[in-house]
Every structure is written in C-alpha cells, then in structure tokens.
Image 1 (tube, rainbow, N blue to C red):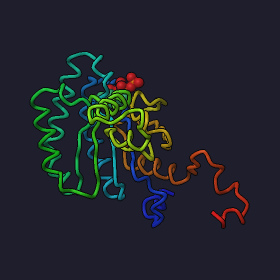
Image 2 (image 1 turned 60 degrees about the vertical axis):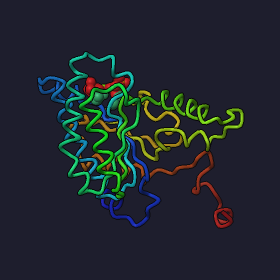
Image 3 (image 1 turned 90 degrees about the horizontal axis):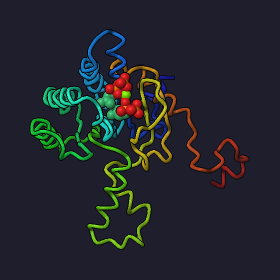
Length: 249
Ligand code: IPE
Ligand code: IPE
Ligand code: MG
C-alpha cells in the first residue's frame, strides 16, 4: 500500500500540496522527563526528515505550521528558545535544502521576530530561490484568520472594488494556496487556526505520533490514506454513477 503510494505513476493520487500541523513537541519531552524545549529541538530534526521525504516522493508543495499567532501566549522563555532553535535550524539546513532542490518561503506576520531569525529567514529565501523540486512554505506567526484579513487588506490597498471581488481573485491574495492533504500529528483533531480557507476541500489526516517521532512511515501512511480517498467536491462520486453516465463524463 505504502509502496504503491510512493511509486504509483498515477500522480492524481499524490497530493500536490501537503500541509502539516506539527504538534506534540511538548508532550514528547514531558514523556521523557525533558524540558519542552528539548521537544522543539527534536521537532526541528523531524522537519528535516519530512522535507527530504517529501522531496524524494515528488510532492510539489509542503506547508509547515511552525508557530501560530496564538503561540505568543506561551511562556517567554519557551518562545525565545524556540526562535533561537528556528534560526539555528535554518542555518544548519541551508545546504541540505539546496541539495534536495527545495525552495523555502516564510509566511505570516514576520515583522515581529528578532534580528537573528529575520536575517536567517531572508538568507534562506534568497539562497533557495532558484530551487524547483519542492516548494516549502514555513508558516510563522501565522493564523488562518490573519491570512484572510490580510488578503482583504491587500485587495483594498490595490484599489480593487471589493464589491466585485470573486473567490478566485481573493484566493490569489492569500499567503498559501489551497491544500490537498492536511496532516496533524499528536492525535489532536482540530485546525488550531491553520489554513482555514485553504482547507475547504482538503483531505484531513490525523496521526497519533508526536511530531518529533514523525517518520517516513507516518508520511507514507498519510499518503496512502489520501490515495484511498475519493474527493467528491459535493458531487456523488464516480462509484455512485451508472456506467453510461460515467462514460458521458
Ligand atoms: C508544537 O508542539 C510546536 C509548536 C506549537 C511551536 P507543542 O509545543 O504544541 O507540543 P504539545 O502540544 O504541548 O505537546
Ligand atoms: C498548533 O499547535 C500550532 C502549531 C503547530 C504551530 P498548538 O499546540 O498551538 O495548538 P492547540 O493550542 O493545541 O490548539
Ligand atoms: Mg500543541
């Protein structure tokens, strides 16, 4: 099943855009009697593996939820360690992103970060700009509601007559396009203000592994789950159609 998802020539069964809510770092650490920040450190190693795994599986686009607008409510010490880990993670993985053909972009309200992380983010975007195998978008200080309001503001600022706006025009202003598959780790079954508009017709996959433990097997299980889904978009599905109607399309 897993091998079929990986090697299948039927690219319709491979999600073009995978998005992940990387959750469970704190619980991973707590289970081991370690500080939460150790969970975050291990979480960054899991990011490295999943990015390489998606590149190998010819996934075109991967969006990772790394820090939500609501995560500012955490203790200051956790937040500042997290940002230091992000900056180090970017610096240490720059070369590997290039080797895997990964282009990296950061989205969210990025002006609230300190100089060190800001410099590393810009550097990674610039140095990976020409890569084209996998587009990795890292959502930082991001929320789905912010993305929607930001799109409205961008439209208004462009002089657009908002009474004439269409879904297509609106969608172009969002930070991230619609997702095909949204994965959330750690067994939680909610979006936590991630891609609200973009998940409208995404397939959802909830995985019990805590994010630092998320491995290629978990990625393959999610891809196999997706491959087995029928995306009906409000229709009745091909299985329900009589043969003649299927032939007429
Ligand atoms: C996800 O793991 C990482 C971030 C939100 C930054 P958590 O830190 O939320 O881990 P849990 O949910 O407390 O286990
Ligand atoms: C969602 O996880 C945010 C990220 C993974 C970056 P949270 O741990 O913040 O979500 P809640 O608080 O459990 O909903
Ligand atoms: Mg959490």
